[in-house]
Image (tube, rainbow, N blue to C red; front, side, top):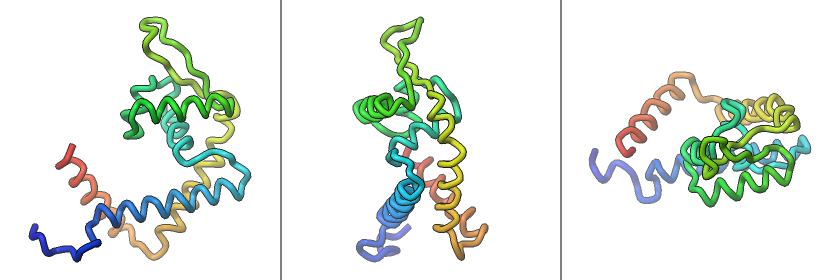
Length: 146
C-alpha cells in the first residue's frame, strides 16, 4: 500500500475512531432518553458479563481492551450502582470475579435493544456487502497488528 493512498487527516484509524465515538455518543444519548444512568464504558463491562458472568477483572481487561486501573474504576462504580458484586476467588484471593446483580440482569434486554437501534441508525443506507467488507478489512488490520 502506498503512502499517498489517504489524504492527510483521512487515515482510516481516524475515520474509525470518529465513527466509533459518534456511535458511542448516540448510544449514550439513547440511554439517557430512556432513563438509564450508566456510561457506555460501564455498559461495555456489563455486556461482557452478560455473555459470561463471573469473569475476573483481568478477563474483563482483555475483553474490553482496557488497562487494570480503568477496569478497577469501572467495577468500583458499577458496585456503587449495585449492578455488580466483586468476589475474591476461593482458589486465589488475588483474583476478583465480577458477578451481575439482579438489576443489571434486568437492564440487559433494554440496553441491547437500544444498542441495536443505535447501530441501525448508524447503518442507514449501508449495504450488507459494505458492512461485510468493512468487517473483513478491519479484522485483517487487527490481526496484522496483534
